[in-house]
Image (cartoon, rainbow, N blue to C red; front, side, top):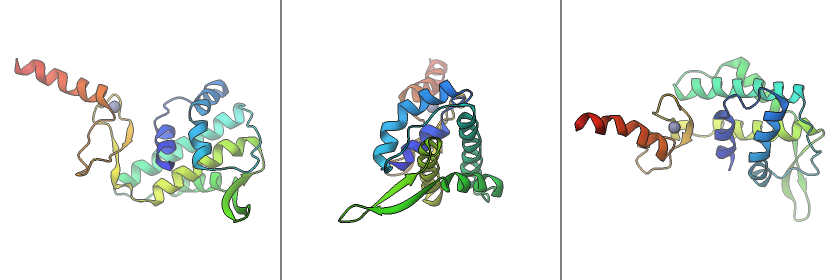
Length: 172
Ligand SMILES: [Zn+2]
């Protein structure tokens, strides 16, 4: 699902500081990303300083864009241009018979950058009203609120419990 890759990318604090960390992060999400986005004959990515830097730039652009749009502001043009540029690293074709939509990239780094950019673009272009930030401030992770009335406040149970514990202590 496009939104889960985007959330993993937005929440990957400091994951692209160096190539090794970036490779580790990609190793954890790669399977889901490839299932969501079939890349025809994608070359194997080589994690070097250039790819780590590209991911940092893309992450900053994604955070700025999502942050502004969810606050109801206009999307920052420079950040949108970065995401758009990453989108141009891949292309879409029809493959097979019966023909199905598939994507392709011509070099390894693009096999990482393009699926992420496409997931971000799909999320931004979709309805962002269900995108929330965890109410536990030190966490502030992005999550997708799937509750019927849109009332979820925390990214997960640990954050919810941490937020409620001090209040419970006060009541005693
Ligand atoms: Zn949280």
